Structure formats: structure tokens, C-alpha cells
Image (tube, rainbow, N blue to C red; front, side, top):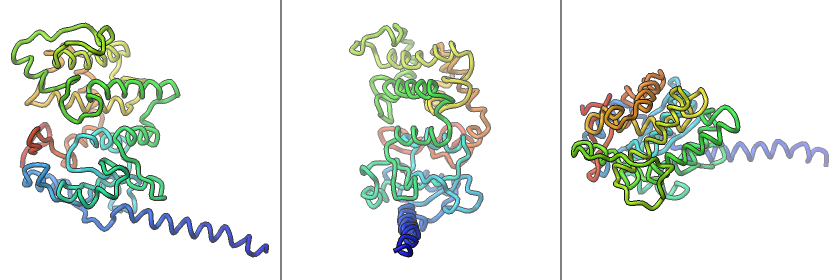
Length: 315
């Protein structure tokens, strides 16, 4: 009887090890590794997202050890969108990770393996075959994992609060493109038409209103302008960068593209946001990521054709 009890821990560990091995198989470590330069060339050769057939993996901060060193495994299509803040978080923390790039034509085979048939996903986060799907869930999970969610309980609550403000206004409740509450394109067009899109503060406006999209867009940005002005530094919460900083930064970096409103800080009277954009872009890990080929190119709607941008010229 005692001998049987002694063998139970070993049997339990053996079963656990077998589960871990099976779980790791969810990360397709047989995928071919692709260099950032080769991926970029292939995407532009495909012309648009709908024509991409790539299914390969890029390893980041794995010191040449590939899948064995990848603590995190991010799976997404070849676009920025819902994975961009996630990628900046991983780059800022220099976390060893893999980026599994699933082209649109390769997606049908991968789709049934994801929790909800959607992407992005963090694959096998715990060695027990458990994935995390949905952009916001992944961001919050990595915020805790990488200490990018605030220094104390209040800061964590404040980061979450501001992220939800960003999500429901600038991100149009989860859209990955222009909407009724925020549109970089609408801001550009209103400036070109010399329209006066000034309006009351977001805090003073009813949810149901007849404001134009450019006016709502200014309101959405003005909320964060006021917070930065009150804080007196280039952080939305506390003294260190958090995931809500990266979310706002990604929005402002896109707004400042040459084909949108590169001088938005002056045109839209958002000096603090302009300073914030410059300060975060100078953070060494962010600067390296923005200037590297590993960042997926932009695309334009409605064709989803790949286009150039800052630090990402068409080859």
C-alpha cells in the first residue's frame, strides 16, 4: 500500500508531462521560420491581405533558440490592427516570443483550432493547451505578465479605466478601422475643408448627439490631452509606460502618418499628445521596433492593399 502511494506522485508527474508535451504541439513548431525582410517582401508582392498565403513564424528575442525559447506565441494575420498593441508590449518588455503569421488563404485551416474562430490568439499560455483569444483579454493578460498594467492597485484600476475610455471612443467599441466615434481620415478631410470641428468636452456631451465624426474624433483625443496636461509628464498613469500608453501611442503614430495629419498636434491643438508621441517613440525598444522590418506594413481600406508608411517604405 505504501509503495502504491509512493508511485502516485511519479504517475501524476508523468501524466502532467504528457499533457505538457501534447499542449506544446498546439504551437506549430514545425512551421518554417521567416525573416522579417522576407515577410515584408512577400506581403507587398501579394498586393493585398486577401491574397496572402504565408503561414510561417518569426521569433523575437529568442537568441537563436527559436521555439524552445519562446515564452509567448502570438498568432495573427499579416496586419497590424488587433495585434499591434500586443506586439509593442512584447517588444517593450523584450519578451522571448513567436509571431505566427497566418495569411488569409491559410486561415481556413487554422480557424477551427482557435477558441472562438477569431484571431489574434496567444497559443498555449500555460503548457496545458490553454489559449487566450480576443485582443483586450490578451492585452490585460500580458499587462499583468509583463508588469505593464500599473505599479499598484489604484494604477491598475486607472489603466483599465482609461483603456476602456480609449476602447469605446478612439477604437469605436472595438473596430479596427474608422467609425462614428473616431476617424483619422475624417479628421484629415475636415482640416482640408477648413471646417470648424470644435465642440464641447466629451464629459459635457450626451451619449446620443448630432456631432459630426470629426468633432467626436477631436473630443476623443481631447480627453487624453487633458490627462497628459494634468499629469505633466508623458505618461497617462504613474511614472512608467503601461498598455494604455501604448494604445494611445499606436493611434497617434498612425494619425501622424504623412497621408493623414502629420502635424496633428498643431492642427488639432493637441500639444501634449504631440509631446507624448515623441517621447514614447524615443523609448529604445519602441524605436527599434518601429524602425525594424518585423513590423507588418499598413494597408488601406476598403481594398486592404498594403501601403507604405513611416519607417516602412514599399520595397
